[in-house]
Amino acid sequence: MNLELDHIVHFIKEHPNVAVEKWKNQGYHAVMGGSHEKWGTFNSLLYVGNAYIEYLTIENQEIAADSDNPLISQLVHDLSKGEGFGQICFRTDNMVHLKTQLENKGCQTYPIFNGSRTRQNGLIIKWKMLFIKDSSSLPYPFFIEWEQEDSVRMNDLNSNGYLDERLAKHSIQSIKVAVNDCESTARDWANLFDFTIIGIQLDEHSSVKKAILQGNSFEIHFCQPHSENSSMHNILSKRGERPFEITFDPVLDKTSFTLFEGKYS
Image (cartoon, rainbow, N blue to C red):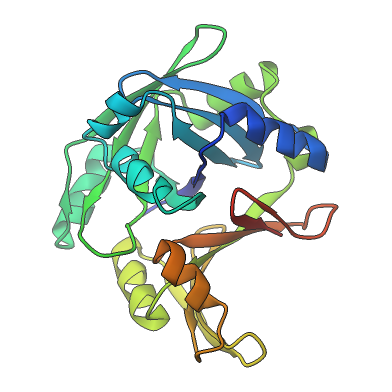
Protein backbone atom coordinates (compact mmCIF):
# COMPACT_ATOMS: atom_id res chain seq x y z
CA MET A 1 0.00 0.00 0.00
CA ASN A 2 1.83 3.09 -1.27
CA LEU A 3 0.62 6.07 0.76
CA GLU A 4 2.24 9.50 0.90
CA LEU A 5 1.46 12.21 3.42
CA ASP A 6 -0.65 14.74 1.52
CA HIS A 7 -1.83 17.14 4.19
CA ILE A 8 -2.97 17.70 7.75
CA VAL A 9 -6.28 19.43 8.40
CA HIS A 10 -6.30 22.09 11.12
CA PHE A 11 -9.83 23.05 12.18
CA ILE A 12 -10.21 26.77 12.94
CA LYS A 13 -13.07 29.15 13.76
CA GLU A 14 -11.52 32.27 12.24
CA HIS A 15 -11.58 33.35 8.61
CA PRO A 16 -8.88 31.37 6.76
CA ASN A 17 -7.02 34.58 5.97
CA VAL A 18 -6.26 34.93 9.69
CA ALA A 19 -4.07 31.82 9.37
CA VAL A 20 -2.32 33.42 6.38
CA GLU A 21 -1.57 36.51 8.47
CA LYS A 22 -0.39 34.50 11.46
CA TRP A 23 2.12 32.63 9.28
CA LYS A 24 3.18 35.93 7.75
CA ASN A 25 3.94 37.13 11.28
CA GLN A 26 6.13 34.04 11.69
CA GLY A 27 7.95 34.92 8.47
CA TYR A 28 6.37 32.34 6.14
CA HIS A 29 4.09 32.45 3.11
CA ALA A 30 0.67 30.79 3.43
CA VAL A 31 -2.11 31.41 0.92
CA MET A 32 -5.87 31.47 0.65
CA GLY A 33 -7.13 28.23 -0.88
CA GLY A 34 -10.75 28.72 -1.82
CA SER A 35 -14.34 27.68 -1.20
CA HIS A 36 -15.96 24.23 -1.19
CA GLU A 37 -19.42 25.46 -2.11
CA LYS A 38 -21.24 22.14 -1.77
CA TRP A 39 -19.73 21.54 1.72
CA GLY A 40 -20.11 25.05 3.11
CA THR A 41 -16.43 25.42 3.97
CA PHE A 42 -13.36 27.35 2.85
CA ASN A 43 -9.67 27.19 3.61
CA SER A 44 -6.14 28.52 3.50
CA LEU A 45 -2.96 26.52 2.93
CA LEU A 46 0.68 26.34 4.01
CA TYR A 47 2.80 24.17 1.71
CA VAL A 48 5.75 22.31 3.26
CA GLY A 49 7.75 20.29 0.74
CA ASN A 50 5.32 17.95 -1.05
CA ALA A 51 2.70 18.22 1.69
CA TYR A 52 0.68 21.01 3.23
CA ILE A 53 -1.36 22.13 6.21
CA GLU A 54 -4.97 23.04 5.52
CA TYR A 55 -6.75 25.59 7.72
CA LEU A 56 -10.37 24.60 7.31
CA THR A 57 -13.36 26.51 8.63
CA ILE A 58 -17.09 26.88 8.06
CA GLU A 59 -18.26 29.40 5.47
CA ASN A 60 -21.95 28.43 5.41
CA GLN A 61 -23.16 26.85 8.66
CA GLU A 62 -26.40 25.47 7.19
CA ILE A 63 -24.70 23.71 4.28
CA ALA A 64 -21.87 22.37 6.47
CA ALA A 65 -24.29 21.01 9.07
CA ASP A 66 -26.15 19.04 6.37
CA SER A 67 -23.05 17.71 4.59
CA ASP A 68 -22.62 13.96 4.15
CA ASN A 69 -18.83 14.35 3.87
CA PRO A 70 -17.31 12.74 7.01
CA LEU A 71 -14.58 15.39 7.21
CA ILE A 72 -17.10 18.21 7.28
CA SER A 73 -19.22 16.38 9.86
CA GLN A 74 -16.11 16.03 12.02
CA LEU A 75 -15.28 19.72 11.53
CA VAL A 76 -18.72 20.78 12.76
CA HIS A 77 -18.47 18.39 15.73
CA ASP A 78 -14.90 19.22 16.73
CA LEU A 79 -15.26 23.00 16.53
CA SER A 80 -17.91 22.78 19.24
CA LYS A 81 -15.04 21.69 21.51
CA GLY A 82 -12.51 24.16 20.18
CA GLU A 83 -9.91 24.60 17.47
CA GLY A 84 -7.07 22.19 16.76
CA PHE A 85 -5.71 19.59 14.37
CA GLY A 86 -8.46 17.31 13.12
CA GLN A 87 -7.37 14.90 10.43
CA ILE A 88 -4.48 13.35 8.52
CA CYS A 89 -4.79 12.81 4.77
CA PHE A 90 -2.75 10.34 2.70
CA ARG A 91 -2.24 10.68 -1.05
CA THR A 92 -2.73 7.82 -3.51
CA ASP A 93 -2.48 7.55 -7.28
CA ASN A 94 -5.12 4.80 -7.56
CA MET A 95 -8.15 5.37 -5.37
CA VAL A 96 -10.17 2.44 -6.72
CA HIS A 97 -7.35 -0.02 -6.00
CA LEU A 98 -6.83 1.46 -2.53
CA LYS A 99 -10.53 1.07 -1.77
CA THR A 100 -10.31 -2.62 -2.70
CA GLN A 101 -7.18 -3.10 -0.56
CA LEU A 102 -8.85 -1.57 2.49
CA GLU A 103 -12.00 -3.62 2.03
CA ASN A 104 -9.90 -6.79 1.69
CA LYS A 105 -8.50 -5.96 5.13
CA GLY A 106 -11.99 -5.88 6.57
CA CYS A 107 -12.69 -2.14 6.37
CA GLN A 108 -15.98 -0.67 5.36
CA THR A 109 -15.61 2.45 3.26
CA TYR A 110 -17.87 5.23 2.07
CA PRO A 111 -18.40 5.70 -1.65
CA ILE A 112 -15.65 7.76 -3.27
CA PHE A 113 -16.37 11.50 -2.97
CA ASN A 114 -15.66 13.93 -5.78
CA GLY A 115 -14.20 17.14 -4.39
CA SER A 116 -13.55 20.57 -5.83
CA ARG A 117 -12.36 23.96 -4.67
CA THR A 118 -12.75 27.26 -6.49
CA ARG A 119 -9.66 29.43 -6.21
CA GLN A 120 -10.01 33.18 -5.83
CA ASN A 121 -8.98 33.51 -9.50
CA GLY A 122 -11.92 31.30 -10.52
CA LEU A 123 -9.89 28.18 -11.34
CA ILE A 124 -11.54 24.96 -10.15
CA ILE A 125 -9.26 22.35 -8.56
CA LYS A 126 -10.63 18.77 -8.52
CA TRP A 127 -9.85 15.59 -6.60
CA LYS A 128 -11.32 12.35 -5.23
CA MET A 129 -11.63 11.46 -1.54
CA LEU A 130 -12.12 8.18 0.33
CA PHE A 131 -13.11 7.68 3.96
CA ILE A 132 -13.17 4.59 6.17
CA LYS A 133 -16.41 3.92 8.06
CA ASP A 134 -15.49 3.70 11.72
CA SER A 135 -16.96 4.56 15.10
CA SER A 136 -13.73 4.75 17.14
CA SER A 137 -12.91 7.99 18.96
CA LEU A 138 -9.81 8.59 16.79
CA PRO A 139 -10.85 8.95 13.15
CA TYR A 140 -8.78 7.03 10.64
CA PRO A 141 -6.93 9.14 8.06
CA PHE A 142 -8.73 9.80 4.81
CA PHE A 143 -7.32 9.56 1.30
CA ILE A 144 -7.03 11.85 -1.68
CA GLU A 145 -6.27 11.41 -5.37
CA TRP A 146 -5.66 14.66 -7.24
CA GLU A 147 -6.89 15.14 -10.78
CA GLN A 148 -3.44 16.48 -11.76
CA GLU A 149 -0.28 14.40 -11.58
CA ASP A 150 1.99 15.42 -8.71
CA SER A 151 4.64 17.07 -10.89
CA VAL A 152 2.03 19.06 -12.83
CA ARG A 153 0.24 20.04 -9.63
CA MET A 154 3.42 21.27 -7.92
CA ASN A 155 4.48 23.24 -11.01
CA ASP A 156 1.04 24.84 -11.08
CA LEU A 157 1.26 25.75 -7.40
CA ASN A 158 4.70 27.23 -7.89
CA SER A 159 3.74 29.28 -10.94
CA ASN A 160 0.69 30.66 -9.13
CA GLY A 161 2.67 31.79 -6.08
CA TYR A 162 1.36 29.20 -3.64
CA LEU A 163 4.76 27.94 -2.48
CA ASP A 164 7.23 29.46 -0.03
CA GLU A 165 10.67 28.68 -1.45
CA ARG A 166 12.11 28.56 2.08
CA LEU A 167 9.83 25.64 2.89
CA ALA A 168 10.43 23.75 -0.37
CA LYS A 169 13.17 21.61 1.19
CA HIS A 170 11.37 21.19 4.50
CA SER A 171 9.07 18.29 5.27
CA ILE A 172 6.56 17.34 7.93
CA GLN A 173 8.73 15.01 9.97
CA SER A 174 6.20 13.79 12.53
CA ILE A 175 2.64 14.12 13.72
CA LYS A 176 1.90 13.63 17.42
CA VAL A 177 -1.49 12.19 18.28
CA ALA A 178 -3.03 11.98 21.76
CA VAL A 179 -4.53 8.54 22.38
CA ASN A 180 -5.69 6.37 25.27
CA ASP A 181 -3.68 3.28 24.22
CA CYS A 182 -0.64 4.02 22.08
CA GLU A 183 0.46 0.44 21.39
CA SER A 184 -2.98 -0.81 20.38
CA THR A 185 -3.55 2.18 18.09
CA ALA A 186 -0.12 1.81 16.50
CA ARG A 187 -0.69 -1.90 15.82
CA ASP A 188 -4.05 -1.15 14.24
CA TRP A 189 -2.73 1.56 11.91
CA ALA A 190 0.42 -0.42 11.08
CA ASN A 191 -1.67 -3.40 9.98
CA LEU A 192 -4.13 -1.31 8.02
CA PHE A 193 -1.68 0.95 6.17
CA ASP A 194 1.38 -1.34 5.95
CA PHE A 195 3.44 0.95 8.19
CA THR A 196 6.09 -0.20 10.68
CA ILE A 197 6.22 0.32 14.44
CA ILE A 198 9.80 1.49 15.05
CA GLY A 199 9.75 2.10 18.78
CA ILE A 200 7.95 2.26 22.10
CA GLN A 201 9.27 5.02 24.36
CA LEU A 202 8.57 6.32 27.85
CA ASP A 203 9.35 9.93 28.76
CA GLU A 204 9.48 10.00 32.54
CA HIS A 205 9.79 13.79 32.65
CA SER A 206 6.54 14.46 30.78
CA SER A 207 4.97 11.16 31.85
CA VAL A 208 4.08 10.25 28.28
CA LYS A 209 4.28 6.79 26.71
CA LYS A 210 4.78 6.86 22.97
CA ALA A 211 4.46 4.35 20.11
CA ILE A 212 6.18 5.52 16.92
CA LEU A 213 4.89 4.51 13.50
CA GLN A 214 7.06 4.90 10.38
CA GLY A 215 5.31 5.95 7.18
CA ASN A 216 6.96 6.44 3.79
CA SER A 217 8.60 9.76 4.67
CA PHE A 218 7.09 10.70 8.01
CA GLU A 219 6.40 9.40 11.50
CA ILE A 220 3.25 9.28 13.59
CA HIS A 221 3.80 9.41 17.35
CA PHE A 222 0.87 8.03 19.33
CA CYS A 223 1.11 9.54 22.82
CA GLN A 224 -0.75 8.31 25.88
CA PRO A 225 -0.65 9.53 29.49
CA HIS A 226 1.58 7.45 31.75
CA SER A 227 0.45 8.94 35.06
CA GLU A 228 -2.11 11.32 36.50
CA ASN A 229 0.35 14.20 36.01
CA SER A 230 0.73 13.68 32.26
CA SER A 231 0.03 16.61 29.95
CA MET A 232 -1.88 14.20 27.69
CA HIS A 233 -4.81 14.21 30.12
CA ASN A 234 -5.62 17.84 29.32
CA ILE A 235 -5.54 17.20 25.57
CA LEU A 236 -7.68 14.08 25.79
CA SER A 237 -10.23 15.64 28.13
CA LYS A 238 -10.67 18.71 25.91
CA ARG A 239 -10.66 17.28 22.37
CA GLY A 240 -10.48 13.50 22.74
CA GLU A 241 -8.10 11.39 20.64
CA ARG A 242 -6.73 13.84 18.09
CA PRO A 243 -3.44 15.10 16.59
CA PHE A 244 -1.95 17.90 18.66
CA GLU A 245 1.56 18.69 17.36
CA ILE A 246 3.47 18.80 14.06
CA THR A 247 7.27 18.80 13.80
CA PHE A 248 9.23 19.91 10.75
CA ASP A 249 12.53 18.71 9.30
CA PRO A 250 14.63 20.76 9.38
CA VAL A 251 13.14 22.74 12.23
CA LEU A 252 11.78 26.20 11.49
CA ASP A 253 13.89 29.24 12.27
CA LYS A 254 11.92 30.06 15.39
CA THR A 255 11.24 28.01 18.48
CA SER A 256 8.02 26.03 18.74
CA PHE A 257 4.80 28.01 18.82
CA THR A 258 1.06 27.46 19.02
CA LEU A 259 -1.53 28.44 16.40
CA PHE A 260 -5.25 27.79 16.83
CA GLU A 261 -4.55 25.37 19.72
CA GLY A 262 -2.11 23.30 17.63
CA LYS A 263 1.61 23.14 18.37
CA TYR A 264 4.25 23.57 15.64
CA SER A 265 7.91 22.77 16.22
